[in-house]
Amino acid sequence: MTAACYLGEKTLKTVETQPREPDRGEVRLDVSYTGICGTDLHVLHGAMDSRVAIPAVLGHEMSGTIAELGDGVDDWSVGDRVTVIPLVWDGTCPACIAGQRHICHHLTFIGIDSPGSMQSSWTVSQDVLIALPAGLSLEHGALAEPTAVAVHDVRRADLRRDEKAVVVGGGPIGILIACVARAQGADVVVLELSEPRREFAKSLGLRAIDPTTDDVASVIGDWTEGAGAAVAFEVSGAAAGIETAIQSLATRGRLVVVAIHSSPTPVNLFRVFWRELTLIGARVYEREDFETAIELLSNGSIPAAELITSIEPLTRVAQAFAQLESGAAMKILIDCQDGV
Image 1 (cartoon, helix red, strand yellow):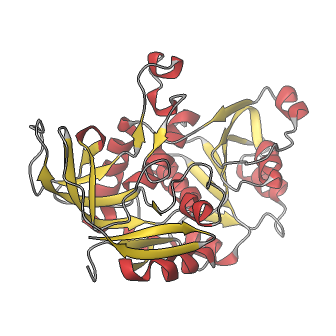
Image 2 (cartoon, rainbow, N blue to C red; image 1 turned 180 degrees about the horizontal axis):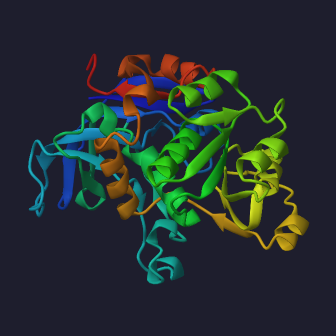
């Protein structure tokens, strides 16, 4: 089989290796497509070298079909179309006992802490499988994971129909959050520095403004009749994004922190106090978020075809990473069977 491996020092290479036969309770998948995300770029830059075992097979946004069943796998069949929820929890820590397994204290994230899906053949536990409906293409099914992120973020916000929501950051996750929020009946504005990303958001029928040139306070004020937004999603990962999000909120508004702030970020706690704001963290997803994501992809609420900038063969994985890093793409899929 062919696999794309991170070798350290910003190096990616495709290698040939033997597929692992499934043990009891496992299945072997023919991986169809794997998406590249910002976390994969962080790994490539060496930011997660303390977690990944080099050489590391990356990837966790995927779709594929079951090719082989291990013993004890009775609820799945060869040929079933699936995606994977890439989380493994211990089931014994305080978070798991409290019913919050997705934020297990000892969580294993597949594709970072263990080998991922950027390979033509991948063996995983049956416990992480999620079925894809026949009417959803495998290309679009590969967007289930990032869409599940957005669904979880919106669910954490407790966003209601007709509420106004600000999304700070118009990258792939920001756009998906905006689309999920719109599907729930919310009125959405996206704040984004990049003109191409703003234009892309507008092409999807979303309202997008430039926070560096537009008077954000005036725009938000006019839009909300002076009240402020009910919810703000901070997806930029920048300190300025946090401040903009807080300033945009109405009294008792909810700020959902989606982006990973790798270092401590100043937060305007006076504003939090003065307007009785609520600060909400949102990390990964739960199985129900995947199920909702697949439904939204299937019914067209998520513009999957428009989000996929290009599909590259596994042998061009280094070029695909470079294209995504350049900022010229929204979502790039790796065809894990092309050229194998």
